Length: 250
Image (cartoon, rainbow, N blue to C red; front, top):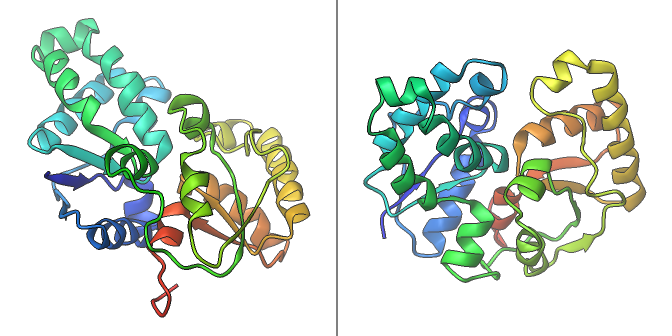
């Protein structure tokens, strides 16, 4: 099986350690994962702010870059949801039909091969115990796209429950949005900050050392408030916890 890593813009720019963690984890599980260097943005920020033509162009590029792989794994629920939900819609627009006549077929072939990390581990590799060791008290925040767009369900929790040494504690109001929402946090900053304050308050109630999620954009938002409040709570992507091993770097 040829597997590719789609790292996404946020991770490539701000959280490259997450991409390295995905590679470390998959190689430990016997997967030979590749990193196509010609990959770019999925187009989510373009489409969500009213630039579908740019989204079509980026969707076409994505299908070209990842067409040869059997599976594409990404550590981002929001970008995975963008590819699954928006690419099929973009492919049938008038602009796409005129400028990218083969996009509909390409999307139909590539999109089904794109997986969130937890989906790939649980559904494709059929593993929940990945050999991880992380002796800390952890709470998990199911981000909106992973919860409502991808319907990941309990996959991330099942993976965390098998990590040796990890104490997983429930997060009150876990299904409530953290307030990030991409440009929502910019356009509605007061509401966004209030929503994040509620989320942080619930995180603090757990007594957790680490807040875990499958989207670094949400972790960046929540982590900023946790840091400013000097809470002592760290934020970590699911991939980083699953890549941790006894005696290894954490």
